[in-house]
Image (cartoon, rainbow, N blue to C red):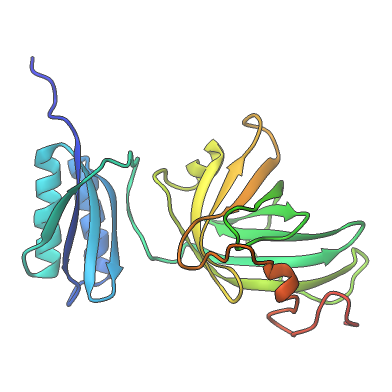
Length: 244
């Protein structure tokens, strides 16, 4: 028996007119049936896709993309990226919040809605927009499916909502499996934190120690200190040291 054709990858682009979320979902379902991997997303006036697989599967997904866009696609050969899914990019996966908290110790925490669960990490030094800065993040127990947006002083200490917004799940591996494996890529759309980030677990599979790292993109700010530069709550405007 002959071997399967070698996988290759292309980037394809079509006009976005008339392409809605239903058509994108149908494209993803079709790619999955064909065994193709990669992603599709809206980019302004275009819909772009990264498609990986055998030649037949790639060509069939291009046909689906052209049918969705109603016209021919511009196609370029690119390097394989090793995706394990075909997903829609640029779509919110849920909300996120970063709280600054003064309890027994001063720290920040970042919480992400992941399905019906709130995943949480404590950040002793807070987040950074500098890709060269790797901030320690300690995984904490999952929370109930509701983000904590309270700022009143309690028995557990003072807190402010330092940032909030929504996020996109990214990377080559689908969520929540990416978190289970220990490397998850995502894009934040907050008031202060924007652009790509990665959470990388250090140590073994059960280790609570992670790193939060800003990815290099247009939202990166090398040499900056966003915690010091923008200390106020995005809800009340007060800082942690202000009276509640």
